[in-house]
Length: 249
Image (cartoon, rainbow, N blue to C red; front, side):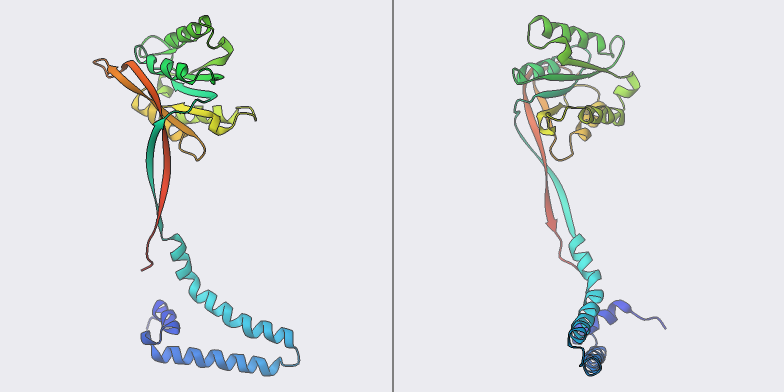
């Protein structure tokens, strides 16, 4: 014979589920309180603690599973909103081979004069590598007096790493970890435009923790390969969560 503990527990509080069980429980609780009161009457404070504490503990033990289910019965749903990007002090961008580098350049120019440092993630070699073109952009910005060479950091990854979302995420995490104390997380924005799909996915994952900022550069024109040839303005992506509580069953 197996005991239905769930039904038994429910019967203690709900006489309709089990009148006999509820009656026995009430009688036992009353009897134990009376006995404890008689035995401990000379010790008022101890008696009060036991008489009030024991029933409360019993109720807590029985009700705890239901309480835990109630607290965990909620669902978080992510949603995103878009707005014109705020200017940031630090920018992390993905350097695609030309003409895809135009989106990174547009993002850099947009955040000036607030911008203090740029981290350009790029890959080595000729296209599909982007390091050479990223180097040219660095020199171009320096020649125009917009940013010094020290302010543009090229983060060169292997071709395999540049297409590995986890390698991209780790690289960006490293940038956050080594920023100086005076640069807060909200001072940094990750531009997810450019790169391969997995590159973009890795950058997006790095920007999901609360307090971090993401953006993408809108496009006014594409080439046949899908790269941006005429970039528009950056838009900030704000990811939030709505919490919906479910009724306990």
